[in-house]
Every structure is written in C-alpha cells, then in structure tokens.
Length: 140
Image 1 (cartoon, rainbow, N blue to C red):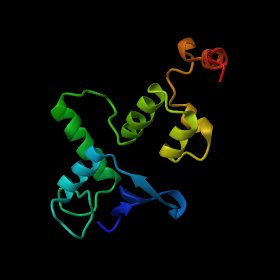
Image 2 (image 1 turned 90 degrees about the horizontal axis):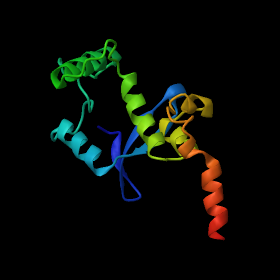
Image 3 (image 1 turned 180 degrees about the horizontal axis):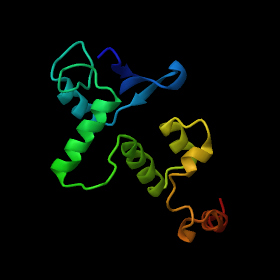
C-alpha cells in the first residue's frame, strides 16, 4: 500500500523491478479506480492478495488469471501472467506509440526485446517512408 502515491498531479504506483530498480508508473484514471476498488479502504498490506490474504506471488497470479480467463470464456492452452504484458505492449504499438516510448513503458533494457512484440512491423501501411513523405509535402 505504501507504493501507491501522488507525484506531480498523477496517481502513481512505485514498482521495484529487476535489480531492485524503482520506477514510478502513472496510473490512468480507470486503473487507479480499479486499484482503489481492490484496496477497499485498507491502509496497509499488499495491494493484490492471494485467496489466503497473503501477498500474491507469480503462482497465485497465474491461478487467478486462469480462473478469470475461464470465467470470461477465454480459452488459451497456456494462460500465464506474461500474456498480460503482451496485451499491454502490442496494442500500444498497434496504436502508433513510438517504439522508444513503448520500450520505456515496458521497461525493456534493449529495444530488440520491444520489437519482438510488434506484430505489424511488416505492415507497409505503417512504413516510415509515408510519414517522411507527408512531412516533406507539408513544407514544415
């Protein structure tokens, strides 16, 4: 709970990643509301808890995700939490967010890791030549 806070007018979550590196993740309003709902007025303890009320570990997260997927009728042979990362990164790339900004959001050290998520990298409609041509034609 102590990892939730405010920073420069943004609701944020402090996350400790690989190597103990701490980053602030801004929470869009809908996500902040969902977290507030999960917290349910508690002032201490973990934000996400297992069914036993303890801190959710990766195994509990996998079980919870499989249960939620089954309840929603999603049938995937190997449902696992990393699929949520894919569901976070891929739509950003599809929406046209720059590869560098997606790399930062995903906290990938190497841009090549982020590029593996880009399903549309062979889409000629998104080729940079068109962006450059439009920029040059606009006279700016």
